[in-house]
Image (cartoon, rainbow, N blue to C red; front, side, top):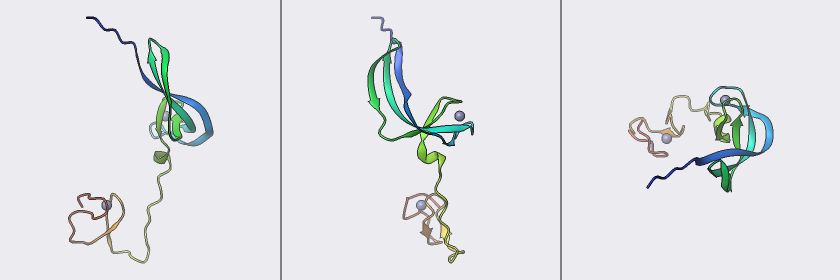
Length: 109
Ligand SMILES: [Zn+2]
Ligand SMILES: [Zn+2]
């Protein structure tokens, strides 16, 4: 049996929430904060829609959706009173120098 499937799941911008809210993680150009929905298309006809739970960032230049958190990385929390402690490079938790795994995130140190 020959089965022809011309479609796929696409993400589409539903509404622009904030224009120029961040920068594209791929090309560095202006990205908008958008509400989006997932659209399943069959033969280029939308047959199913599912709104995204959270707003996402969208770059119009390279048509890329990416999570908002990628655009605004939280500043690393460095406590100036403890300059010599060893910190996990993944979660920034304070770890003992003889630990080989981070007790907070389980990463190998
Ligand atoms: Zn881009
Ligand atoms: Zn960690």
